[in-house]
Every structure is written in C-alpha cells, then in structure tokens.
Length: 80
Image (cartoon, rainbow, N blue to C red; front, side):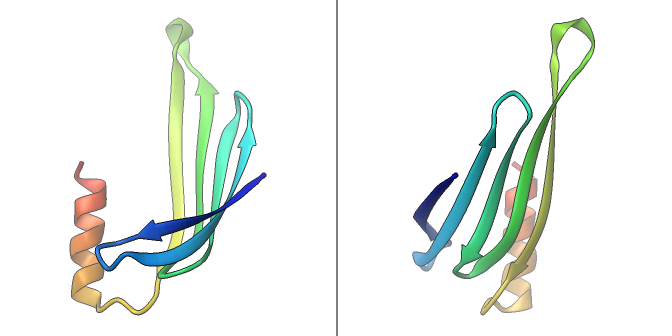
C-alpha cells in the first residue's frame, strides 16, 4: 500500500490517497481526504486473443463544489 499527498482540481486543493496494487488483478485507489473522497478500482480481466479487458469503477463524493461545477467537471473527465 502506498499513501501519498496529491494536489487536485483547478483550485490546487490538497488531498490524500491510498493506493493498493494487486499485481495482474487490480489497482484500488482510496481518496481519503480533500475535495474528492471515495474509491476508484481498476480491474484487469483476461479476454480473447491474448488481450486484457480493463474495467474502471468510481464511487466518489465531491465536497465544497457547486453543482454546476460538478456537472461540468464530470463531463470533462468522462468525455476524454
């Protein structure tokens, strides 16, 4: 497990993350402090033709951000 400080968002807000690496299986990130809290899990699954399928699930809460900014930011994150 790795715990680290991060700077997030356009306001350069400080936060903390815990990252757990499960080799060849998943990467779990816990956002434990800051404007965004919750979890992100990236899971690797074998697929056909010697390929790997990548699944990402988010369970996050945004604090101290007006709803319109949340909507615009989420649009930006998921339309890349």
